[in-house]
Image 1 (cartoon, rainbow, N blue to C red):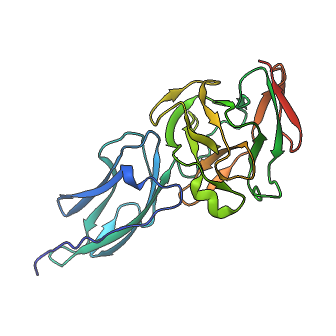
Image 2: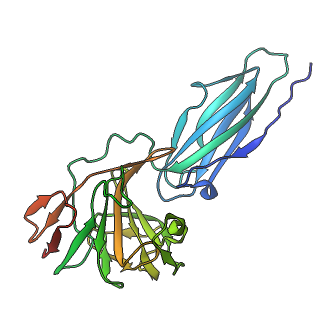
Image 3: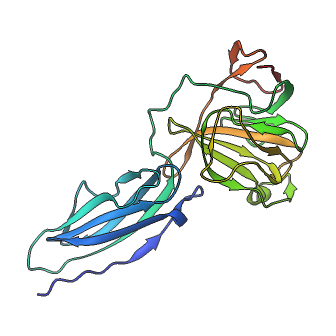
Length: 270
């Protein structure tokens, strides 16, 4: 019987998707195929592949999650080898992609972040970790601040996503689709998202390397927002969910290091 290959290409992604800058493809080798990925993002990307095979063995097994390095070309993911020579074989697959290193356990749990605004300034944490309004089961912070407040990077990294085109807002989750934001990837594999920036309020673009305390944009009142504020969250991105993280900040003159508490005001003078 003549050998043949049937490839069905299906794309399924999570909410934080990277599919537009990730390409998965294969090349024929002796007795099978190599499966590769190109990643044009400025951060690693995790890919989960679910194969359906006939007369092929999947190197490493099925439904594995692979991490493709930032800006990497032709990274080998897996190989499919013919099981019984002379018999027909085929495969199809579907895959999921997302930013970051899935199950990243190597991040710096002791890193001390700067507050996300310039000195000297003081702002209140209106909603803290696991806040009652929109932070249930989420470690994120809302800083009440006037529209146009200068926002600074809490940590060095590379910009991987910017949305700044929107100008609508409301107090319902349906307005989440209008969120303007900046996402920065950190050296230890974590991310920071700065949300509700004003329309055209970013001072950085995708691919920019930023330093700690660098000006990155201006706060706003856009998207799912009931008033002018900055929504800040530090997280690990897994293939299908975020692991949001509690983090410590320098406050006051910079000598005090603490977790921020809801309804408290924090100043930055360093």
